[in-house]
Image (cartoon, rainbow, N blue to C red):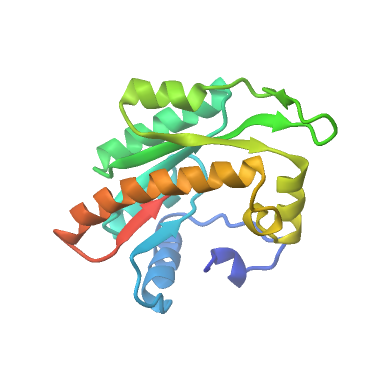
Length: 192
């Protein structure tokens, strides 16, 4: 794991643009000893700004995974991101819907507090693989706050099963992206 945040004060915002951002991304990719990789997954902020554009210009990215919450406003961001990735010729390997529904820890009932199915509809509209949905639970949030992934905390819960199912589907899509990448270059770099 590597993060630009490791080099900053915890309270400091990253407001880099242009050359400074390009240099930082280059440094992360060139100066870190990544070892022998099959995949390098890069988590990026949402949107279509300097980070995404610089990344797509500096590296030969094999594919992008889109992650959206179900609300229409979030889907608008995903639509713009897909358009940007299309323009820079980075294939979309799939889309995941995050916070699809809330599972009450008291009664176990599902509540669709942010709507539901928006990512699936976007996948159908753009003919890209829909990889699944991730519910939100108090245990997921608590594990995140403690730095303990839900898969470690409770590997058999519904959220863990969702992550594993998505990972299996993503692995299939990454195999395709990696195969295409191997034809022209090194390891697949997947952005999220």
